[in-house]
Length: 380
Image 1 (cartoon, rainbow, N blue to C red):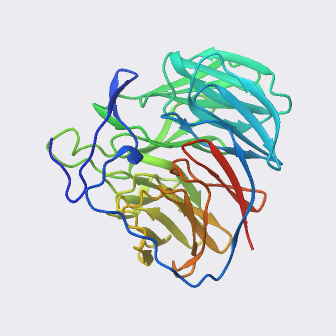
Image 2 (cartoon, rainbow, N blue to C red):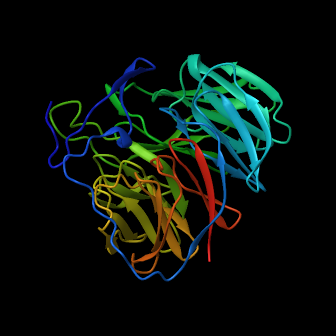
C-alpha cells in the first residue's frame, strides 16, 4: 500500500453494501505533530449557553439537526432526542443501533439503524411513525423535506420514501465503487431536484418525482494506479447559490458547476475530507492538512487561507454571520473572520473530537463531540 506523503493513513476497511469502505478522515494516524494553538487577539467572544450529554456517537455517522426551536440528535446505542434550550423534551429508542442520522423536517425525525432499517419518529412527541427495511446500512444523513425522505444505502443506491408511511416511491441505482470513504455527507433538495455526491468524484442532479438522472458532473477525476490512490469521493453536501452548484471531494478538487447545465465553471486542486461551506461571495473548504481556504465563488481564486490549524483534523466549515467556524480533534471551536481568515474567537466544547459538522441553530452554533456532548454557543 502506497502512503501519500506526508500523511500515513491507518485504513480501517469495513463491508458496506457489498463494497469496501475506508473509515472516516478522523481515524487517520498522523505522522507529523499537529499544530499547537497560538495566542491571538480576540475580536469576538464565543459564550457557552448550554451543554447536554446524549451518549457516544462511536463509529456512527451522527450529526445534530435543527428544526424550529429544537435540536434533534442521537447516539450509536439507539437513543434519539429532542432538545430545547438544553433540556430534553423527549427521548425515543430504536430497536437496533443507529448507523446514520439525524434527518429532521416535515414533522419527522429520521435515523438509519443496523440491518437496513429506517426509523421515523414524530418530531413533536417522539412516537414512532413508521419503520421500513431498505436492504442495507445508510451511508449518509437522511434527507427529509416536504413529502419525501431520501436515504443513501451504501454508496450505490438512493431510496425515496413517503413521509407519511415510509412507502418506497423510487430507487436510483449506480455502479458500486471498489472503495469509498465513510464520511459525513448529505443530499440537497431544491424544488424538483435532489443533488447528491458520490464515489468516483461525481455529483448528480436527480429528479424528485421519479428518481431519474437529470445531469451528472465530475467534481474530481480519480488518479493513480491503486484503488486507494484512485479513491476520490464527494463529501459533505453539494451547495447551491447564484446559479452555481459547488462541491468538494477527498483526494480531488473543489468544483463549481452551472446548475442548469451541469457544466463545470471552475475547479481547484484542494482535497477535502469533510466538505465545504458557501456564502454569496466565497466557497470555504477545509483541506486534508487542516488549512481552511476561502475561494471566490465566481472564479475559484484564493481570497485567503488559514494555516495555523495544521493537522488538527479540522472539520467542515460553517458559514455563520460574519464568521467561519470550524471544530477540531481536541474539541475546540474556532471562529475565523470571514473577511480575512484571522482568528476571532475560540471555545472548547468538549475534550473529545468534534467529528460531526457544526450546526447553526437559533443564532448560535451547535457542536456534537465524539463522546456525545452536545454544546450550544453564541457569539457575543
